[in-house]
Image (cartoon, rainbow, N blue to C red; front, top):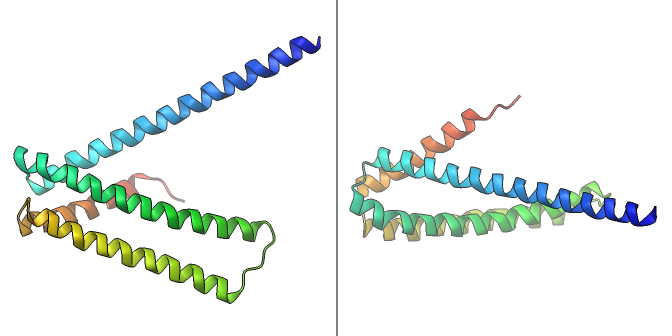
Length: 151
């Protein structure tokens, strides 16, 4: 009887792991689909030629990756801060101010990245297309935000 329970437990865990793995696969597929839609949308709005797109997108993706890592660090910090509060820790004004400063430092760092990559973009595409890129990014983000249903 104990062997059956142990085996049942092991198979349940395996099934759960496969289910979670499938969910991760679905999330990854959804994210890949999102990235493709973003590229198509922005490329069309910018009216990029094939050669421009081949040169622009690797640099743009590099920027997005760096921004993601930077924002991921801040989200982790905020999550830890919030979790400590949920667990009963009372944060001091100094701790709140430190968190705010770190968040602002991340925003400054992101702005520096944007500036650095706008210079790189200028080596690939015209200033007009850089402007169109920034506008298309905003439009795409707004479009994605509107698609979500918020109460």
